[in-house]
Length: 384
Ligand code: PLP
Image 1 (cartoon, rainbow, N blue to C red):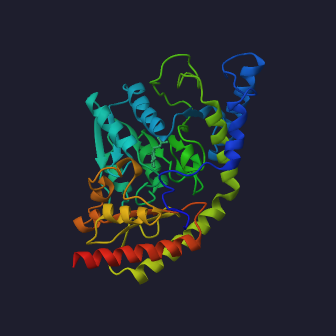
Image 2: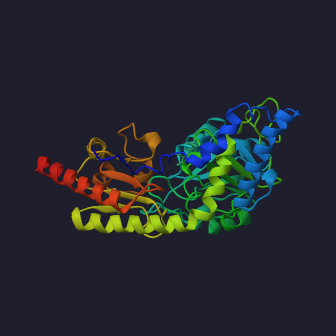
Image 3: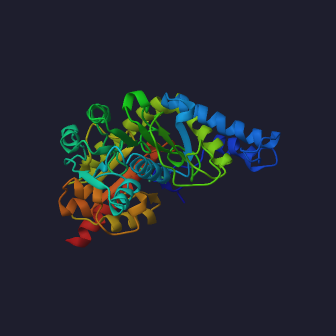
């Protein structure tokens, strides 16, 4: 039997063996100490945290003290939005976000509305792009924070973040960006993006699940929502997940020298696959921006067919893909991202996300192409 083909790297990535090896000492008798303890066992663990924080700060081009570790992208997004809005009430009560953010941002924005904050949700165009002009038009003297993701997790569209940052800063507001999907593929630095707060997650870059980071520019007040022992410079209480943080640091260390070449390889594989799709499957359309998109992302619609049926058929044939972000793939509601892009019903209902990664080969894509073309042909026959 053929091995399964995994084309869902945007949902999560497998742990690299080197990362697992870097975590192991902190799961054993050697480095189990509590990093807040002053004795040698504690300091052993503290050194692992410091090393990982150093690696992340180097990668982002920021200060060591500007990085806090969290339980992942969801917590970092929550901490950024809730923390900044609560701590800066004297500056205003207005938050701006967009219609294509991850649920970790959209649901948090709704929560803030229940606390009395005013939220503006910006629309996107048919490619899923936020217009910098719409940000300029929405900013008021009351705006404290603007949250615009770096690239969307479903359609892969990249946002003009630098331009947005300049507009936001000119009005004295802060910019938060969720860079969970871009950090593993593109040169993400604080300087290049211009963000004041940045969300990262380890399990999208071949690190462990349940660990992430939040960058906060020095001087910005953020109200913590985990209270206790005051770890992470009072920003996030709770004994740190040392093995996971050590693994995150190692995943970043391994990523940096490989990132550009791997992005190039994935872009070329993805473009090859798209060319084959157009040739083999009549009516296939690309969702998201044709050029400004993540190297590994292909979001397509096969109008007339149903995404859930396609996914189940692909799964039975040994291919793992997704119909939206993993968090919503259990539901049959149309994707809010594709809906915000104004796609017609037939495209919403048949959208399929294929995301490539380190394990993806041309042979796998050729096999997926055969399987997908076969499924599409069979489903179209059944319909007619
Ligand atoms: N933000 C984006 C853009 C994501 O794609 C994800 C994961 O799907 C998250 C946030 C949530 O990250 P985590 O799974 O680490 O909580």
